[in-house]
Amino acid sequence: MPTHDLVVVANRLPVDAKTLPDGATEWVTSPGGLVTAMESVMRGVDSGAWVGWAGSPGEAPEPFEADGMHLYPVALDGTDIEKYYEGFSNATLWPLYHDVIVDPVYHRTWWDTYVSANRRFAHEAAAVTAPGGTIWVHDYQLQLVPEMIRSERPDVRIGFFNHIPFPPVELFSQLPKRNQVLRGLLGADLVGFQRESDSLNFLNAVRQLLGSHIDQRTVTVPGIGAVEPREVTAQTFPISIDTEAVAELTDDQDIHERAAQLRRELGSPKKIVLGVDRLDYTKGIRHRLKAWGELLNDGVIDPRETVLVQVATPSRERVDAYRQLRDEVELTVGRINGDHAPIGRPAISYLHRSFDRKDMTALYMAADVVLVTALRDGMNLVAKEYVVSRPDVQGVLVLSEFAGAADELRAALLVNPHDIDELKSATLRALTMPAEEQHEAMTSLRRQVLDHDVQSWARAFLEELQNAGSPAAPV
Ligand code: GDG
Image 1 (tube, rainbow, N blue to C red):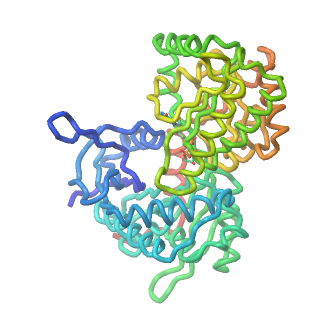
Image 2: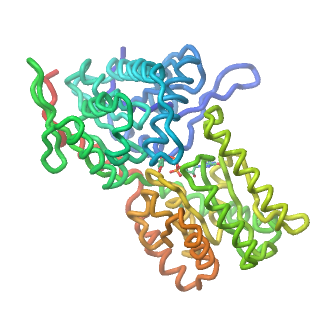
Image 3: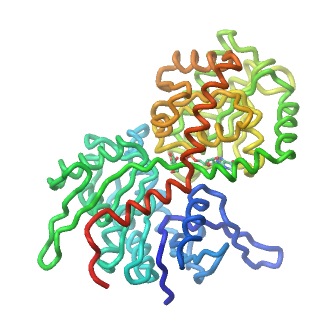
């Protein structure tokens, strides 16, 4: 089997299958930030690979190459998808790690499948990594993978990055099998988080639940038998976006024209307010709609002059809480439009589908205000995408304190989205902010993101990984 110097392990491969008219499959790179970040890092290594699920149940396709990356599909069958992915990952861990906004569901059989699925990813990664190579594991679906890889391959460096928050120990303690999860993560040399509070929550959980010795950011994992004690570092690496790719789009005259056209299509309102989210209960869409509905009821927003565009990308549609959320959001949008929309135009333009990058950029360019009202969010890339999409240095970002991005984007209008009155007044303030004040805030926001792009995030993580932990076992 071929071996690689750098191997990324994530739940999904960075490609989507497209069926051609003749029935053949074509793999199309999915345009996420992680893919872009990894592409640039992998270009710098002799041989890079990615291990992940290809997106459809059943047997895994044979390994293949796409865009110069070596891809190793991992098989997930219907039971894995139900219990490992929709169950333990998205109905247990996701709500627990996002401050129990909805109740986490605990089922013992989900755990068993989480373990067996994690083992499959770990085994594949261990099999394709070069002697003394580096493995970078991503996200909450794969928390057991670091330890599983280490037991097969003590000679490799292992990093783990958690894209979502790590909860305070008081919440994390609810998790059945919590100590196994912590031990799984401690198989890594470096465990990375979005916010400083996430890193500290993790260290606290390790201290309180495992009783480990911790010196500042370094955990000592005791040795057992012939296995030497090891050190594991926890560190903060706020993820970012591919700013160059955004700049290319904002330079494109067609996209400028598209932004102007979107405004006309919306009835040429004076102000466009935009929300872009996966349809997820963590994103605070209900709170945003409540505030918007009240502003219309109060008569302080005129629906003939101001429109809210809400992109709600379909997500996890087989998980109960997501179905319920969709029903509630669509009922609320329907009511608000019924009460307030002028004839032939919406008060809220609600879009439950995905758009391509060009349309997304045109929307950001057209938006006078973007509302990010997450109740809890690891980072929130929409906030960063918006400011980089505004080379005209105009527009206002309303940003929840509960999104990781709030640690860096201090010049945004920061809000507590649970406080509907505060959300209303921040929205009004954003809608009436003078151009000069917008310019000042936007200058600072843009500088922050342009100086810290996703490539520098990936490089910082990988550099720290080479220094973190204990020396690897000899090959
Ligand atoms: C997780 C963490 C963390 C959305 N709709 C469309 C579309 N999008 C793109 C956005 C943005 C991305 O999806 C969403 O990223 P977020 O960061 O906002 O949120 P999650 O999906 O929850 O991501 C999060 C992130 O991981 C990275 O670590 O920031 O906290 O929860 O890029 O633009 N893109 C296109 N069409 C759409 O309709 N093309």
